[in-house]
Length: 343
Image 1 (cartoon, rainbow, N blue to C red):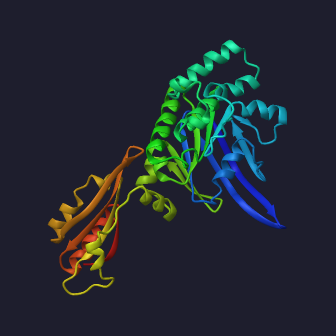
Image 2 (image 1 turned 120 degrees about the vertical axis):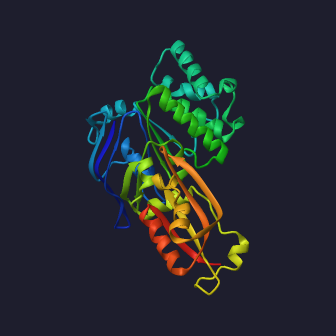
Image 3 (image 1 turned 45 degrees about the vertical axis):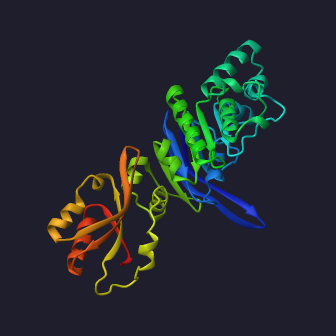
């Protein structure tokens, strides 16, 4: 549905060149939800604005629905943009118009007959769950409700693709989950292709089929969500994955944690499980094979892209050589082990 081939974007500022995007190629399949994740300043917003040519790439090609659109005339580009809608972090609703009239606005601009506008808008209001709010003004809506209006308005032109520019970053966690569920439902009901950018791996985890990780304007990793979570190849991807799991050393352990091994102290380890390693009885195996007792302090497991993953904080008890062998065994079985100190 969308293909970016070797996209680069250079901005000029005070006679200095800023390379916002560097040779990025991604493919967004039809009917899928594709996430682009990166830290602030990574180039995410520039990338998504290149898709509908709000930003013209310095080099590279953009394909939409098997048509190259990089160098289309303004008239033809307007026609293409009608099939590529966009929602933003800030909802950009017209404060003087009701929910109904905000959604109707693009249809009015397109000179759609009034009877068709009424039917279409009512259908969209029902789709986004705002039936009781049709005649309400934006000032009287919550942030989540405003984003629902923005989504309905974006769908008014029957787009093939919906671009989401940090669409949930201004919302609280519960509202974010409800908006993501709505986007997933729309994707499934309408077969709508969605390309979203975010700095939150939780967003990717909840609804995306595929994900690309960008850093400093470069594509560092891309794959299915399940593959990224089970076999992340880069440190930045692993950092994003760890951000979805929140596991801290308890205060009483932190107070007596020694950075160096000492007599009578045992290593405190963080174990990172992904994919197959989650379901293997690894702690039981190291107990049998290496005579290691593992005192589990805390753990958290989750799913993403059909793959189970998780973190565990544990104290390993045994002689130093056996512990070293046990750690090697865990690492050979796709478990990342980090020794945090000794308690």
